[in-house]
Image (cartoon, rainbow, N blue to C red; front, side, top):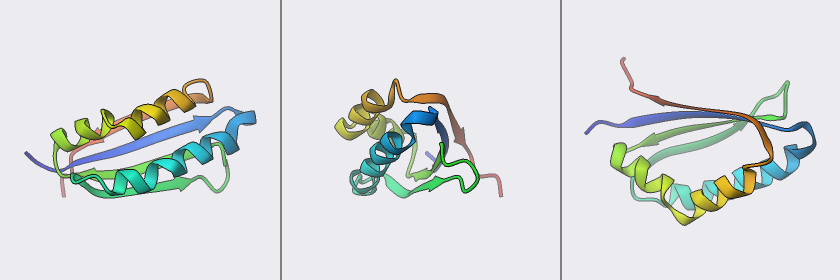
Amino acid sequence: MSKVTIVAKLTAKDDCIEAVKAEVIKMVAPTRQESGCVEYRLHQDRSNPAVFVFYENWKDQAAFEEHMNSPHFKSYVAAVADLLSDKTVNQMNEIV
C-alpha cells in the first residue's frame, strides 16, 4: 500500500479556542510515537486562531486506521466533540 496524507481542518467555537488548542497539542507527542506515523504537524491559522490544521503522513491506510483506533485519538475526539463549529478531514494521495 502507498503512503496516505491527511489534511484535517478544525474550527473551534469562538469561546473554545484555548480548550481546543490544549487538546490538539496533547495529540502530537503520542501520535508521533506511533509506528506508522511518517509526519505529523499541527498548525494554527495566523489570521483566525480558531482554525487548526493537521498535516499528516502515514505509512499506509492501515497505519492511519490504527491511529484512529488509538486511545489518545479516541480521547481527543470525545474531548473536542462539543467544542468545534466545523471539521473537515481529507485523505489525499500524492500525485507528483
